[in-house]
Length: 557
Image (cartoon, rainbow, N blue to C red):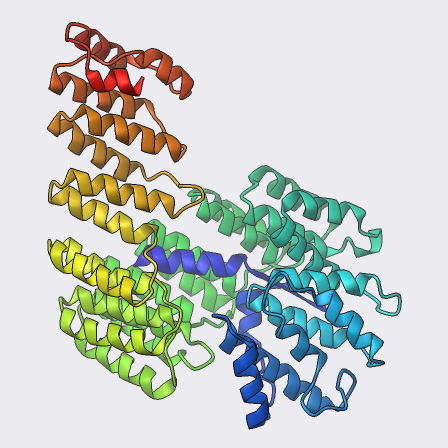
């Protein structure tokens, strides 16, 4: 649980929003959002949106369009058409599909003799970025650059650079920065490039950029240091975090995000005293804590067995949970479950029902995971059926919580039955789904099913991030059976996935030893796979050389 909370926060701190006064962390920006006054859409408009927004993002996009519409109506300014409710923002947000062009919409709008205001486009870009529709946001930014009457500020260039990095990659972002006019190379654009380096994990360039910003006198806020600390946290270089905080204090003062990253560092170090010291420094600097602060403190206390302090932190955390800070509720569910506090778990869930009309997938997943920790699979299935009837996302992560419970508790037949059910409901099994079954069948010694599910799991991905624990477990299982045919098939599957190691070859050789057979051209195959032989490999080759040649080895070779 701590890992999910930590990385959710680190990911949040890496997202950057660039405003008129330069970049600010989206986490801080989120705290300062003032929702626009809403004007209810007409029934005809609702019907039109229902027909046109046929995508998983339909509800979010409709809400964004409504916000832009209400703002334009309240302002009574440009961007409106003679038709009631029609705005440029609405047209752009209704594009939905990436293949459609925002530039075409902008040109048509201008050809119709309607005005295009920069502030309106900035709002649209902000909404599109919020829903990760980066391509259309980038197209709008590029169109704005071609309009001589639009005076672009460094913050505008920073948003553009950030979108270039997301859509076209880091090299394009660097080229964009180099080609910018010198007056645009301000703190905001430098922070945007630093953010791109951090997101792509290019440590050397990120550190060089920070040093360049220091020489230019651009380190006037905590944001660049927060980016660097997030990068070090993500790469596991925890020792760099205190060094970066010390460096930060040379130039400026820590902000809320700084302190929350610092507390995340303390949680990774399991340091209760360190966390309490950080919290005291936070009060000394008059930085107001938020729900994330108390969530981190609660998690640290609970993991240390200090349940009374953990509960106190949860009380403070819940005071800061609201419609605006909705993510806090999911964290509350998880933390109360980790305390084995079923009463407060149910209370928070019921409070959420009263507060929100509909739950998102993340909230359902948190509640399902929490219920399975109490072994209450009956109530978990009730919640799952509710999700199944109300959510149209068909996100496999939700049923995976049920599958995980069945498989971990040895109920493989129930897991198979439930898998058939979700497939009938048009939920597509993911890599994680099939990986769960690999572990389940390993426990049941069903080698044929292990290979079948592994093949399906790897086929779900364009590129597999190697899971060494999984690979080792499968090869160890096959070793015990002495089945050289399965061992060789496994090697082919992992080779196709781009992952072959010396230890895999050693495992296959141990399987040959178990079967008392000799493999062929192992050294040549290892050379082709670009893995080196070690002493164990040579010892096993000498051992198998006295056995007859295995037929499978001949075929595979």
